[in-house]
Length: 441
Picture 1 (cartoon, rainbow, N blue to C red):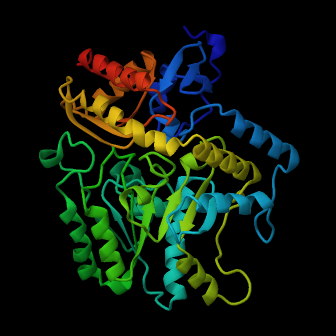
Picture 2: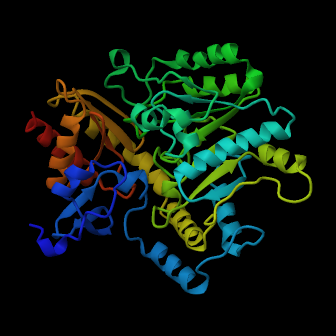
Picture 3: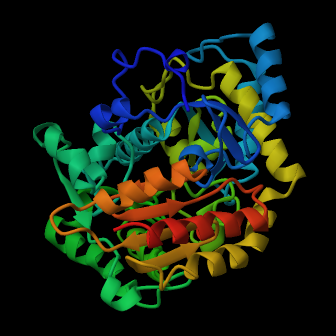
């Protein structure tokens, strides 16, 4: 048991995306992390089934990353990125570019996925203005989309609780595509559903309503993670790409979750064979060891913005910590691990085992859907009458007590482990979920 001495004063911290009152009554405090495991303050090991928050793709406590950060802190703890630079920022941009689709070779560094999304939206607006089409200001998101917590991100996002308290201050001129989730047609699909490609045609309806000349960009997650693992139907992303190209609209992929191996490829763009114009990145880019993010930009978009500007600053945007020396050191070390250990290929090889283990829960108590792609799975539970989300929250807590860390949103459990996971650990995760479900009302 955790002793009172192990627990600090909990009153001052306002925790993000947390039921603060409930947590502080029964806190779950992590103290250490190594490999596939967290250790709690009372010494209990917890198998990490979610790579932290979809981000620790190479596993915890990697000595190569720790050493790179330590060396950098001792040598250059900070360097401004406005009108100055440091060598690793350029090296890190080149390293990221090597993992991007051909032509996406201009990198703008940020500090988080939220910042990456807002940066991508601003780049899209600046691009059309540079082309002489400054009237293209409308942004199109998707229902149930999650694009971080900046005002741009929640405006194009489509998760109601994230938006409703701020609805009076969201960006104007935003519209949303329908989401692609349909339990009646796609329940228990392995990989991409066969039904739903036609939902991309809703973009043509939106174009007809607003006129293409007013629309700057469409932003979607190739695989929607935070809303509960929504896998794109076959042909859906390809159709979105074709429609946006037809109407001169930029396509943004929010790959904060999917990039850096989650689907068994460097990016979801590579996995699906669909290349967007802009791509938001974060999480796995630094193995979460230092907050870091980026936007990968097609050279044509970058060159258009720079070419239209007078001498001086071409794009009035950036962050104090863009390309922070510790972040770039972490990025370089992380990407080297991915390449040296072939973790993306490893994830691809494990995907079939992961899929089979997930779908063994199809008949488990309360389960109404199992869906998966690559190294990510969603287990949807039937909600309790009058208490949506309560069942998944209980399963989350019980699994943690049993030594397994999951994510949940609504009544959906999400599993997305580090890519170093062993087959026995995959079996352990899904086996314990099944046992907990059997013991949950």
